[in-house]
Image (cartoon, rainbow over all chains, first blue to last red; front, side):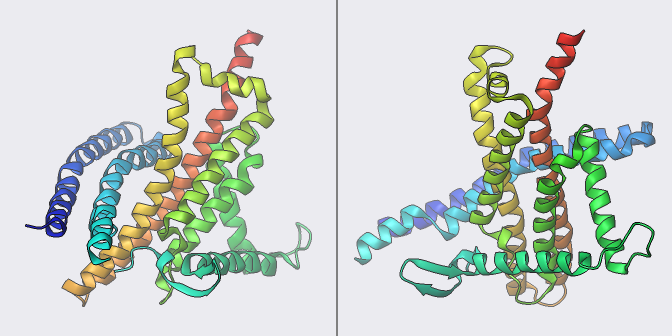
Length: 92
Length: 231
């Protein structure tokens, strides 16, 4: 296996692993946050405005971890710096 | 597959390049400015009947103002132009995705990074205006001096997170629609596009609310301290 295909295979495997493993923890975290927020809204419906605003902010914070993984996967697949380096070197 | 509108270049002369991001940002700025100017050009006194468009814009401004007041109760109108402009810019650019041929400028990392840097600078400016240079810089060594590197790290990472979150959400939306067009081209892209409108709007809300939270944190640390000294 030459360098280019090695880098290609590694990038794709790393991108899928990054997305698959990296979305587990944010999914659990978001689920827990929503559970808490829903039960709090059920207990105190008057506070639903501020609760849902805080929930949205918290969800955005948690989700940004998954977004980091997604951005890294996208970089690995579409604009891989190592791939560009190797192909520019071999292609001349 | 082009993942950002940066790679679409319409015109270039020397090192000056006009790509889709810049063009659509200008179009959006023109649209927002012309619309506001057009609606507010014949404003009369408070008693006269309001036009339909004026009612719509007033509803937007009142909503944004009440949201800001919830986060930062004092002097909320100081931050209304900044946070409101950011919200309107991102929300309009996401909602205009229904127009065929529209490239949302927020799907490019350069736009979102520029917005996040604007927020980072505005936090410092509002903080310094409110509590002076030394008073503002002192909050970096709170609660203890050894927290200084963590506070600085927090400053950098939250700006990065602000930019990447918006970029990732808006970019992934167009990417998903592109992938779905290749797999199931009939109904499913429409559903995802409708879902993307919702995500884009929520992201605009989150961006504006988070920047308001950062500004409020920079501004309010002093008022708490003032309250303590008054006691």
